[in-house]
Length: 178
Image (cartoon, rainbow, N blue to C red; front, side):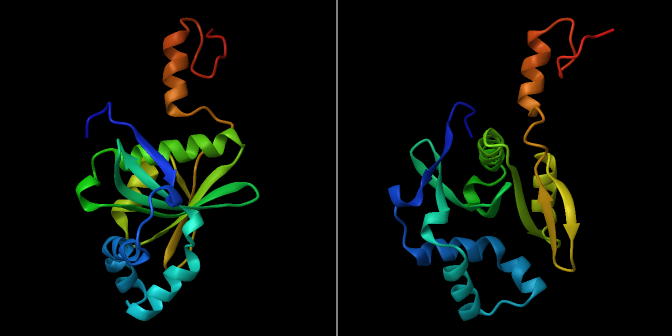
């Protein structure tokens, strides 16, 4: 991915997609983990998808003008819950997901919220990805890990770098250096 290519989120209503195509990407992304954990039953998964992920919860992930994936989010009292992050296979492992997560966590922190998400314990690549984004596991059960972003009041890694390069005699948290 060209570092200058903007990644942004736009409401699904601005980029309509057939729900069967959206479900197909979900299946492509999660079949292995759902099947391993619960067993995949097509009709049940389709019905659950339709009930759990309404159109208004989805945003399109745009790379420039191209739709490359989708996120589903739900606003809670003190958090923004990321329900799904789905990227087309050709756009995985190219920095798009990282930029999406930065955007979501920065947006949530502006309102003083954490970002939360659940991830299959057997989905080691996703767990590694989220932990690299600064998320910490706050609970687990036999199937899932629940992760949370850092405090919305703590500076982001980008803010720490900006602060450290902008000040000569202060640490990244703007405390006087002794």
